Length: 416
Image: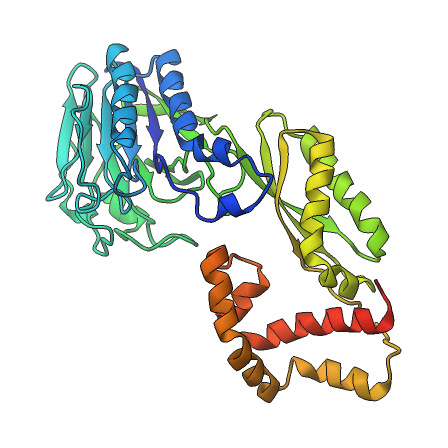
């Protein structure tokens, strides 16, 4: 049995559009816009440098229908580089680039093999003794288990199954092509090359069943190092699996502990955290950070009251530390200490305390602000995780009132 190596990647989302990122002044928008191509360039270069025998892309190569032919031409050139290096590429379509979604085509290099969507197919590499089985998505939402229709393992071959799936479910990912590890194991294959989940994960090692994650984080929901895996095989057994980083920009979440802080202390605490992140950044890649101010503090009201200004302050601090350190957003999530006393009069204090629990007030607030919130959404895009706008969008007006009450107490007590 021939020894060989292959590169397994997924979820490229080539030329994925930026949803709302351009509104964040000061971020490297052009760099992020071109990040998926740059990361894919790294993938191609790494495959050539490592002299892998073939490349697998397990779904969502594209993010949807191409906005123009530039996406297809770019990909054709990239495949040409692999073709010149003698490296075949096997592509599976997922929910974002299903057969019914991506309708444009360009002639690709002869080394590219794309799985059909009508039924599972098998491609053989006889010189290596490899059989690769897979089925592309015919439409974006595949809710049935595709695995039972996959062919039996080929005799005297290293069998690879390619599948775009969340298995039995993964947080944040639709349950497309649902199946279990036992379903996969029952086929008798030697390796399952999965896609769809954007985090690196190995759900099983018997046989190796791998989500490589996506190759480039595109939003704050996709934090940390991103890349692919290089798999070495000897005598029909996986002997090593190496995760390789391919990303060119990295997203990070960071918490700044504001416990007991005065408003004047917070900037220095932000600086300390950002300085640490920069110092620990062994990759040397540009970092885009979302900061959360957390912890109990008597200054909670004052911090909430100037929530919009903290992003500008944090960006100025980040720029002074490094031109490759960027702040995407500052989320104010501090709370008041449970023993906080407010000297603003018992009656008024009680009214403020009860505001978030008053269903009548919540109903009035919702009726008054609903149209305004719709207008804001059309200008700023849909609200994101942790935004007060998200509470409003979900009709959680008590949450909006509770945050407003904290800021109001700050103003009335002079804690600013």
